[in-house]
Image (cartoon, rainbow, N blue to C red; front, side, top):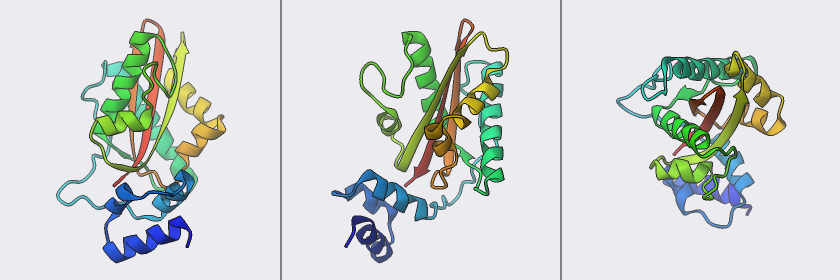
Length: 192
């Protein structure tokens, strides 16, 4: 029986999404497809905020850019018939820290000079996830970089795929400015 079907039967029998943590032998693409079919877990006692939190942003201008990206991404998703992404303050903090790190250490890439990627950064923040993705953007001397970031992502097949992936349910956006250069990190996630 294919791995994804075995996993689905296990989920039905056990009733826990956490079983994904002990899976071995499945290709990541099988897990991603399966994760898209699992309904998001309802968190009893807390409703996700309606807008991203500005708390922790570098400045009011950075918080505004983060909100603009969040709003535009959800508009694009809704136009495509997808559910909007819920804001995650914890993911936003991980995204902000990575944007700040790229600015301070003068690099740009999904894998840092020390070798950590998005999955490791999210795990280090003690966030449990079924799937995670990341979009990055940087620009210098742009008068309005937030719309440029979203347009750049939509023009790139891999980044567009992250934005339009139905399996993602939460997002966090982090913007950091150094001089006249902006660094944008958007994390996408489906939690466990």
